[in-house]
Image 1 (cartoon, rainbow, N blue to C red):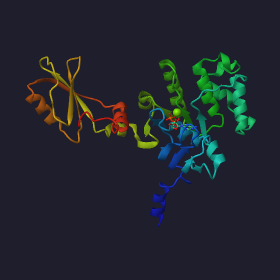
Image 2 (image 1 turned 30 degrees about the vertical axis):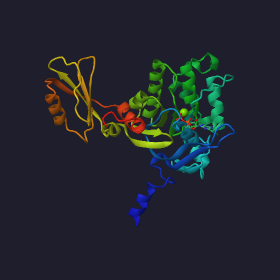
Image 3 (image 1 turned 135 degrees about the vertical axis):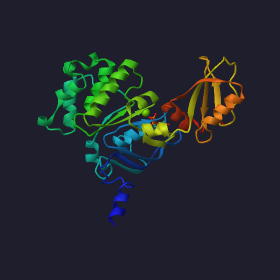
Image 4 (image 1 turned 180 degrees about the vertical axis):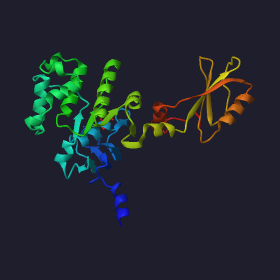
Length: 332
Ligand code: ADP
Ligand code: MG
């Protein structure tokens, strides 16, 4: 039955070209040593990364982000599972799979012996890009390094070195660019510059996948976000849906007269009196209605001058998904 066949496509990683990356049941256990026991870094990752997205793999340090990226890059062997890149299975078609991605690793190591231009030419040679098809100067220009083409790499600033790594990842014109913690440890200004470069590449049609432990970065840059925690994917959704799905909202209430303490509003709400004199009430929309909160406020003898909602952001989602299980719930 043709319908059944098309349904089957979504559950298999092979031959599905709608996903930039499709991963099924990916596990990785690092072998132990005399001093350390084996480490199960990935516990069964299922992920579909849409073509054309700016996809964020968000998670705290040690979550397993680099392990996953390094499996895609062919630098780490997975223990189990299937992965395809741009429709090519990494085990069955390793060459095509690898040709479909450019990877900027987390660790910066720059080749100090070659100029940016030479470095890109060498990289293109490694990928078997014929001389006539090389775009060395075009790539350097795109990444704002044109005037450094013949400079010593040691004369480049930290930001330029990072951009050079991106340039190197792009020499074979892969449809997918993967950046592992592109802005870890760089200052705000450099971070914004890097974001602009990434968005520029995305605007030119490149599917971008980045890992980050900065919530702000994922929120600012990514259209789709997966949160990874202890080697599991805890959610994977378009950013707007992810934020909208949060069962946690906040109201800001401005009292008519100064109050000295937050009222007790029951177990489904937590009220906090902040220094600005407003009362902030966080609540679970599935368990309590705004009208009940307002009745509670009224019963506590507080009259309301003004009322507004505080928009949720990724931090709220992240807290709920990654810390919710480890910490006692404020709202009981
Ligand atoms: P992230 O990139 O999210 O910070 P990693 O993928 O680097 O996480 O690490 C996931 C877990 O696997 C961590 O507990 C880390 O200590 C462990 N790990 C990473 N690389 C190795 C390795 N080569 N050998 C043993 N354990 C490792
Ligand atoms: Mg990492």
